[in-house]
Image (cartoon, rainbow, N blue to C red; front, side, top):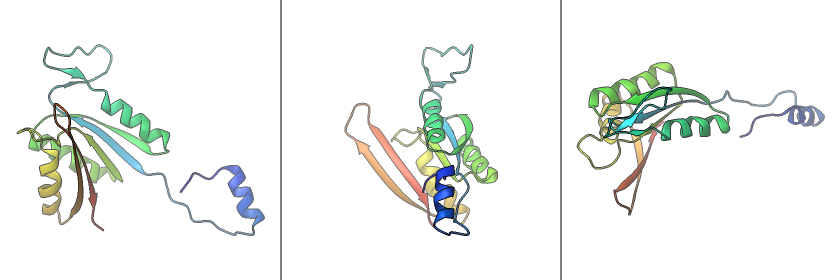
Length: 149
């Protein structure tokens, strides 16, 4: 798909189309998980064990560049309950896409993978998981869960 420009509308009319099928822009919520993250808001200072969250602003900007309506889901702590709240908020808000940065590695506090498998199943939903581990140090995991329809 693409966003229709005035020229596209003119071309459709010139071709005799009375109507064209369109869809609303997707709504995308973006949140970063991890107690090691510090918000990039003005005046924030990371603790010695923290780094500034760069993924969330970058992912929000990337989603906006491709035409999505975005919602900043903020920072999500490394706990089952915090991840549950973030995902539940996305479902309640009617977000079409929830992008969670972090929490998919092999650590004891990486709850995103667990939640997507167990939490959605409890709600009668299922996902198909696509997981990729990059050979790097520290280990980098990328996962994409797609809701089954």
